[in-house]
Length: 297
Ligand code: SF4
Image 1 (tube, rainbow, N blue to C red):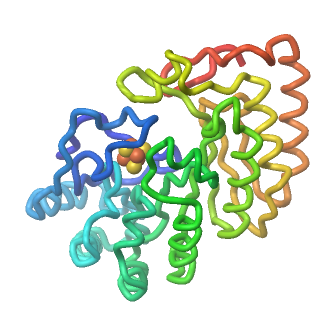
Image 2: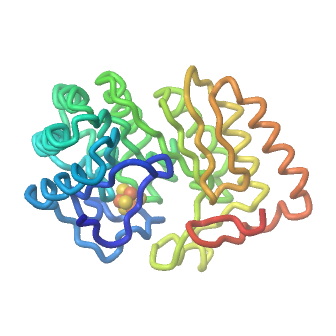
């Protein structure tokens, strides 16, 4: 199988077939990102993609879900994605869903008709790093979209009947804007009503601009207490009809998941209980290990 470099995938894609169709990320300049620093973005040749599908057809003929790699595979043209979907369905007839990472810009570059055709071909379950609803935070993080652009494009996905995960990062506004970040992000999430909400917390690895900015004090990281307050403030304001909140990422002070609105009170109680347990440490900064995992939880 041609999977090059470090391969990232969302945690809930653990059982999916990982099929590489691009290398790196076409954007590759988010301030906090350390995923593909040295990788020049390129599109994998169709012959290589077909050879990988053939190999999967021999070893995992009953697979139901495929996740296209790498960083923003939805950048591919609708024609190319339809060709890949057709090749998958021909050799792996039980596949129901073809998911991948996507950016707001990737959606903007597709027409409504293309989105509908992609959905019919089984492409949905997009994993989208929206990160925040606060324009100041989005601009600093260099995401390449505003909150309003995210709202427009996500509603286009819903109109095309495509499910997606809205990925948001607690702490994106830093210590100075954590309240504004929670409020604006809750507003955006409520406006688009995602099927899945994936919550992580901001962390920086050597090699990205955010790491330097945290070291020099240009960006002021949230304390443990502020991260808990932001998570609580966000959750309190969420007014969702039917969304799964996936917050089990190791970067979170309180890893949790559950259905909203049904489990909201239970989840708020868990945050408040953790705040009590960590009362002596609320003004400290999180100590982090691999993938931003919290060591002083
Ligand atoms: S879009 Fe994703 S993979 Fe690309 S630079 Fe931003 S965070 Fe990294």
